[in-house]
Image (cartoon, rainbow, N blue to C red):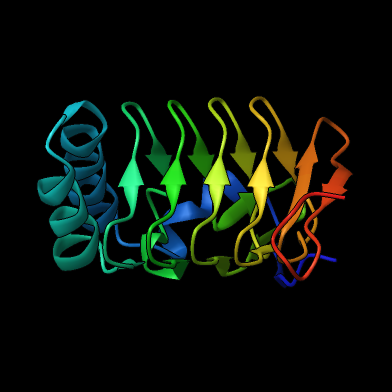
Length: 167
């Protein structure tokens, strides 16, 4: 189950009220640096931008593929462990703006996790250590450590035994 905080809004849909919750200048600054990171092939530079400018928690030796899109408005709510690979064109969201409410939720991605290309990770999920997420998946719920999951809706395909072998 995703862990998100819900914030009801009155009047026009929540996206029209975005700048009541986030400074427009923060959005512009983050957008510029995220775009630089998306195209940058130098992994240490990407991680430096994510850590120092965007405020994300990114573990050592974590690698972001080209075109990864992290949350523009709340990147500081994304925490990624060590030696993890985030595949090409993956989107990691920490917010959802809906009609009558918006939702915020931290995203926790563990150590040595493999996220396949073109995956979407929704707010409020935790992906456990050693998990593998198949390409093109929508992660809308927590993923157990060592699990191999995929699809939309997300389902478990296999799980690692304590010895590290998929069952």
